Length: 337
Image 1 (tube, rainbow, N blue to C red):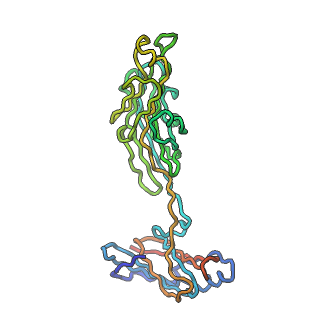
Image 2 (spheres, one colour):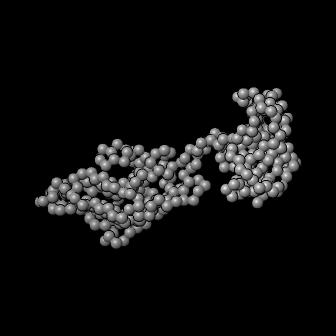
Image 3 (spheres, helix red, strand yellow):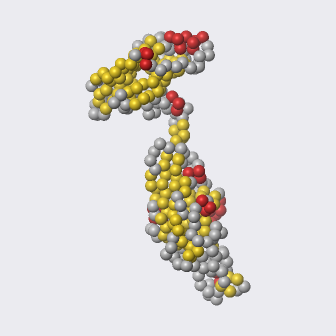
């Protein structure tokens, strides 16, 4: 524990009558004795500044019955909460996605067999078809509003804002992709099933951890870090990526000169950069050691709190080598402004 030089002004002395103490785990004669003999008599609160000019609140506890005890202390301040002694998980509460889409041109329609939004936590980030096929992808298109067929490319439809935090797995990146499939465009030797074009823009993502304000991850296609993985015999330039727009199209041409590009299925995956916001396992909070059983009895113990407020301090008591039953004594600490 780091100690600072303080200029103290005593604010308040709390008598034992105001302490909220509670003993737990009294399962043997030793623990009964500990619970009976150990006592937090009172505490005082003083304020001042440390050597760096930061305001601090110093609480000094008056103790009795400490002879022969191992004593540790959970302050209830940040990093010292008894309830987090076994660790905890900070949850990802929000991972919101929205975008705008336009479906236009051609004959193949705007359904999920043509355009879909996909998610994976085991994609390896590769650039080949084998990398795509090796991953498990979940189709989440039905969570969003997708553009119906439009006569031109100027009208976009908002997807709605959707929380996809449930798709994340701790320790794994989340990949999101827009997949566009163009089915065979040749029927009985004639070009008769023209590809549908999809455009996507305003790819907006924000995320928020438990207890923290949401942060913006992207607002544009460019910020989202998309890349293409093209599967099939694509003509050059059919899929286009700009800072603002994803343009996804099948092949074009005529059956005389371009049969090999038209009489086939093509598939383009526009994959965004991985998202690494997930639930976070946080290490256990740790107590401060007040004394060990072989050390002389102590009558006072002091802790520097970060600021005003109500804190639940917990003294943990054991005897001997500390491996036996423990007793806890709780004290509610009220620190004024």
